[in-house]
Image (cartoon, rainbow over all chains, first blue to last red; front, side, top):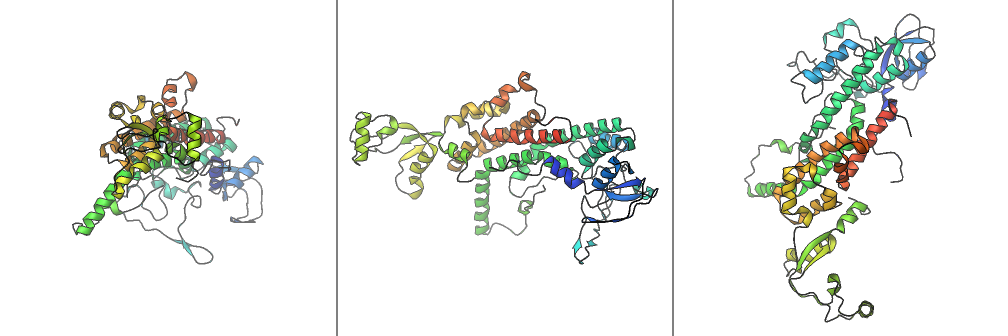
Length: 271
Length: 196
């Protein structure tokens, strides 16, 4: 109660996490390699491109020591395309546009391919699967991977906003980009709000609501509201749920409950 | 819900219509029937003497707080004769349910009960009302969508939403606050709004 901040992660905390995203820069000055806690930074030799964490890139940009190459999605054309998919496309009327494929995940184009996650290894030899912000989703990618349709990375709101703020002269048509980002946010927020109808699936036993493609800032913004709604629905429906459980237990006791597990049994929540 | 949750405590204090099944001596105070004058009653209680003329007759209907009514009615489950029977409170009556079915958005829940959903949650534990669960879930969802709209684009005092927002119960107010604060936090971060 005495803790002044609201529960959950605040906007500036999310932005802080997003600053670990790697972006591509063109340095204007030489800089020796740095040994940072987040990993070593390669030496900067102009005009060779380099990948840096966003915070360092913005710092160098502010000091006019580097130019930031905007990520592939942060251009007017891909953003306009995504906006069109979000607002016009039939399949995505109630869903969010697909996120960029994770390493090993088949792209949206060939859906039948099986995913084969490629694990990475820490220096100690522990296996892990990389997740944003430790995926190169915001670097200026090479032409080879441009086969995939454009998609919004996990930290799109934060990266887009920060780059517009600090490096708008490096972006192509920043005013257009700003307008498109705002439109995208509006469209997706409206979807989030209209999605309240399906939330009781999450409130009753064993249901789940998929939030694939939702960005971290959007999650942070809606977390308080959505969990509040789910909790409210759960409490209203608790007596019914109780009755259902008792009935199931009774059936099981009577032997009428056969072994085929129905889908209600799977207890998972995606949040 | 925590022991110190003020909303839970206030929900406990909401009135519930109860009908006494038995004659109870000495409880006339609940009915406002002290028997003798108030000071005398005070002394009699202190002397642990029951008043013969301050009794509750069988069949009397009194509004009792939820915590008391729940306790008194619980005898039925233990197999002994129960002291009181509970009735649906006014806030969850058939009339209100019909209004909610017609249009959840126009009902002033706060006027019915400040802790409408908490109260109905407790009531649904006591009564088996499958249909009421559905009606209330639907109401909650429809109103939550409306709350999210209002929380993000408040039209201020001039908009049409004032009436609706005034009718929010305590749970919904918390929802509104969560949605509104986050949207504001976000706007401040992105520089669209100024920090106060």
